[in-house]
Length: 453
Image 1: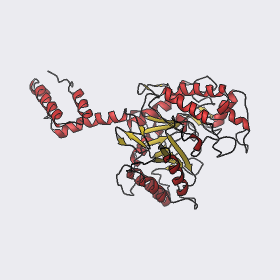
Image 2: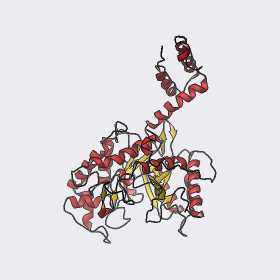
Image 3: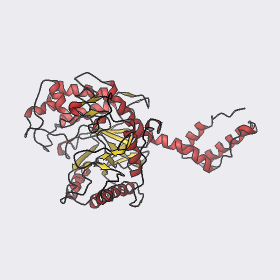
Image 4: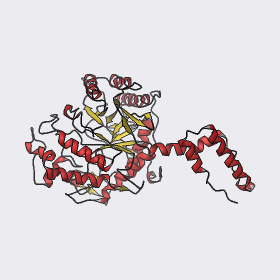
């Protein structure tokens, strides 16, 4: 008689019950009775507590990965425990601008746009796991409009192929125990799209580089037709069904939050001119589509007028360079309304002499953990790049001066010192101490599609 694995549901039940001794005893008895009905060739090994733990652990991990992050006052929580949100910006995971693909692969030359390979995406997950990260922030998992490779190349026209890399990213993040946050629109006229595309869709053609920008830019927030266009796009994006998971993005706990936008503002850079009514309408709409998602205010800076919007859970700011005084002021503002704060981007390089040191910046964040009101949940450096997989001999470069390339032999001593500080910080946020050594991350080469399936 061949054995059946019908006892595994009991193991799952044991996980949910934290494996009380009485239940473990029942499982051991069940397996013993089960063994007695089998011929010698099919008997199971003795069910020691250590073996049962090893059987139960994968179930525990899967339950955690399928559980939602939620906000409890000024703290993020997972399965009743504090959850910290440190990690990296990896803006290109859905659509890239840094690699020219082989001939015959999708490529839009005017924007240098192409889809990243599965291998590049998987290597990022391996790297972040090694660094001790919990979270990825990626613009192109939420903003994808206005060019032929986008999710929405033109108003109301959808390109389902564009979901392939987004689907793989979400799936691989889940398999590696990472979470995702994604802005839904960009303040700028970048290759992956933004608010200027929605304006152009309705005949408002204004310069994105003028200073100040035309007041017509506010039509993105105030024109009811354009707001509805944006909401239609959000609905198509969030209700997309991922074939790797069988879940819509709205359902998948891997995407723990959507951000109303990236560095949003009005005609003048940094003016925080994002209407309360628009932010309330968009955040409410996201929660209608995805009730378990958290929503992050996408204003560039902590917008005081948004603090009391009930459908906003998290506020954030970006630091170029890191500034301890500004960080403490931002935390205090968000603490005043008992919500969560997140450092959404920062310069990790240490190259700016005006910057607060990375260690002192981290100390402020770490000192808030394990308190009754943490407020600041974590931080995300800008930004991570790795190999041009399947080519494991070349690291992908980006031109803004902030590309972090973990393990690159060409890194300077300062680069690696800063990267070590980041890794040590990510682990300290989990109450784990590691040394300055940087463990190697294997490049997946041509085998990414067989990894973590």
